[in-house]
Length: 253
Length: 347
Image 1 (tube, rainbow over the protein chains, first blue to last red):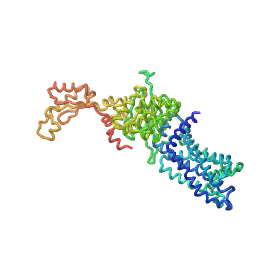
Image 2: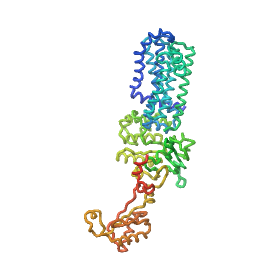
Image 3: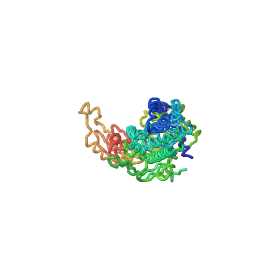
Image 4: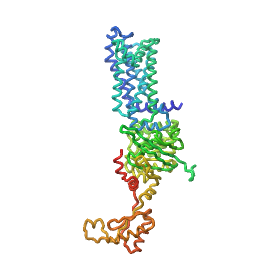
């Protein structure tokens, strides 16, 4: 399969570049760890509140953190692409016979690998704080986070390819990320919300993804919310890849 | 193998055009260009910034879809077989193509692999190209530690990893010091002489076009306005200029120092003009202070004949000089503007 071969070439190239400056992988991980240490403890008394979802505070909070890592760890990759466009690296690869989809996929795969390493570390550290989770539940959540990573990386690359300017990409990401974060129940579960806010959050596909991850952490593998979460994550990933592939195929420069 | 009667075209462009939509309305960057580039030929696109050079190259390199026209590039159709075109050409962009944090070998072997070359072969090619382009022993160095000239040669090596038969070079020597430029020119000639590759380059440097190209296409406002070898262009458009000074004429110093030196009688100059205008191969005779300026087809061959003609008529000549026109003169003749002026104004 030449597409896969080309994607792996791009993947290896991008991974080597990243490992040359691994400080960004660490910075990406420090933020969720700070949330874990400085915000997580606030949730323990809250877990007795009526409306708090089943499971202990950490089983509710850590899946949210993992989803947050998946979203915020991936949505800024477009900045790296803009730097590469400016350096002429993207054009140099576009002039080869490699498929445009492979040029995208190689980059996305690199991002997902980094995300998986970060998510695994975050889960392990959380266990030190008192999280209890089964291996199966953690693995299913990792799959959900990986799908989110595919979606957000792709969308960020599409936006970077289209805008080609950091000054245009930054406000766009800010504009999108804040409502997505607030309406997803990542930090505090939406079951605590008033009716109208809860209903509003249902429009946000990310809220279903968060619910799905929480169900997985409770080991409720048969719950409809887990299915809904997986489907939502899968659809987001498919949409992101489709849109980004289209952007990469169009002559945009 | 190509034969003289049926040349093997590396580029055949017909009516190639590109219009960009902008906020202020459509901009016709390229307005229908027709030209051919043969195998093993170095052809230069000469024109000011904004003339449409890069746009044409990017269309031919599959990076930009033409709004009109068609082209065969390295034997493949640009519209129906862009992937095949990509396989056969090398393209070196104007602004560089390398990642600051990557090593020379990483860049070269990654690029080669994207052309379908195996990893082992890719590394071997990287090593060979580094040797050919004076980058030997720099394989493990990071791009950010390279000098400007080394970086540019790496760009060119990246365009050559798959041994293409046609190479596009966009402003290859911009930003290089004179030594690196001369060195780069030698490498570009080597592509033609050693590999038999056709090279299609853009430049807004007259000396570069003059020194490097077998043939030049002058482009202005999106149209090709002249075409030919550097020598032919200079001859056809401007001709050589022979300047003949008559004795008693005021030299430049004497004009400043004393107004009393003997001027050449106007009648004498008139006589010289009438005489020279009738000579074979003379295009134009213009009177200048103390002499005549004669435009001829071949200055080196005809200067002596002009002098003899004057001598036979009893008109003495004190000095004679022959000047070949520069490509700037050519550009001026064709477009009515100097290339230097044009370069500043267009965007």
